[in-house]
Length: 146
Length: 146
DNA sequence: GGTAGGTTGATGACGTGTCAACGAAACCTG
DNA sequence: CAGGTTTCGTTGACACGTCATCAACCTACC
Image 1 (cartoon, helix red, strand yellow):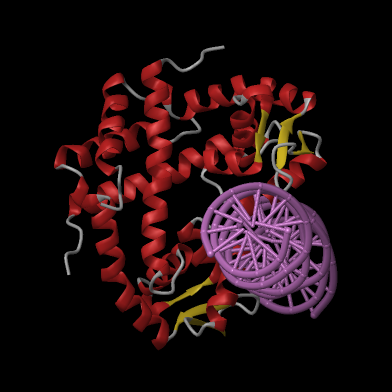
Image 2 (cartoon, helix red, strand yellow):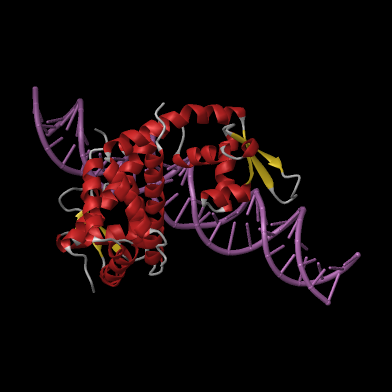
């Protein structure tokens, strides 16, 4: 059994601590404006589609979510008026998710605030060399199935 | 509004991608031996206590979990025989969480395999300088409320 | 000894997401 | 054109965790 040596242990624990802390901080800031991170993710991704519209499958693919998860979440977002469902004329089985005007307003307000949060808790705390390190490290960890 | 510049955007996205990928990979490996990450966390932390025993409050504090969360999770782990609850002789309100023999066996089997997973998906893919960078970056991001 | 205030752990109700199964629709083949 | 297979999105059942509330207990003070 190859236990982690002290350097490895420290790095792993530091990584874990950081992930939890950054996630909690950015989530808290979003919650303050009435959105969860999944909410923001859906709004943001959907707003980038032509006509702010997507099939549920495409949207789920893009977000790397299951269709079941998105269907559930979309139902709740629909209840809150952030998006609406429409039949897909091209495919009777499918449905289209369309950002509502309200959803767009909410996103327009949320986007700069979320970016501020990302700056406050992540970007602005790091030096350019740190950002480069993060990309380098991400590159090495990419294809984690390898 | 200060949008992220290209370097910042890439680093943030790379960070987010990496966090999701590493978490998914290590969770998948644990799931293959019948444990969730919270399961492993509880077993591991409890095993470090004298007599493999802790009050729920202490255990929750140590893990940075709410007492409610731990109570719920402990109930499910108790059902699976991984731990048991006992009255706290020192405090009638409290209860003690005690690792069972079965739980200890499961952890003994899981620990090296989890460490292998952490190696495969994280540690062994990085250079010593990467590990140092991670610690440096974690240091900068620490106290994210600041 | 009695009381006020705080702590402990549990739990109902609910939000969130997974799993498996389903009905409807689309596609493909003979 | 019928039958089989695949795809799409939904949904029942359940796991997980949060929030708020509660009963039981502990501690400090009078």
